[in-house]
Image (cartoon, rainbow, N blue to C red):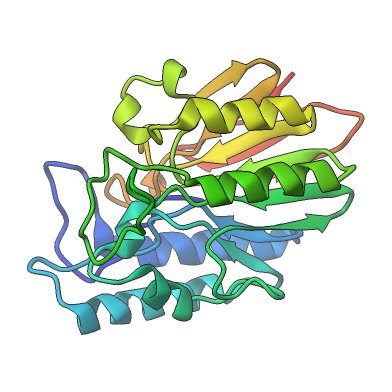
Length: 263
């Protein structure tokens, strides 16, 4: 699931964001994931939002409330950082108040292997000069994956012999989406690294709330629809991804998210 944007505030009708309802929407998702006994649960960024006007302690309370709902999942929980996660907070603050499974606490990008697959989590929440997004001091239309992280990515991909699934909040398929403001400015460079490895099967993304799908040079790019958009539980969005080496990748969508098969 992605773009939860939880905050205990009134909805923004212009942007169709019902912040307060995200608590119940996440609760529903976790109940389904527990019932289906999935191997792990991952949220792909913008976990929380902020008040108007923003207040740091209030923002931390929103983060604590929504993180508590996620941690009701009976298994490993992982996080991907989104730009709104650094509204009112530093990146370090955000990381200090979430829990990633295993040894990945306090890491904004990392990788892990499970059930014969290698999973990579990237962070594009940097300005083009390489500085971290920090307490709202950034231009969200100019995300960037810095050199150090790209070098780590090359090494990480080279070391695995497993098929790879990538998670990132921002969209990497910049030439294939309606609004490339949602893409890192160096998205093409990141895609080239993924393609050169010959190991990446799919990239799962958020950020663009309407969702999208594309295939570029043999890699599937799937952007999930946002949880926060729309009034009522019927306007929730989450999905189960089914991976099997011998079959296409299958998406089982819930609520407004449709089923899909990556052939």
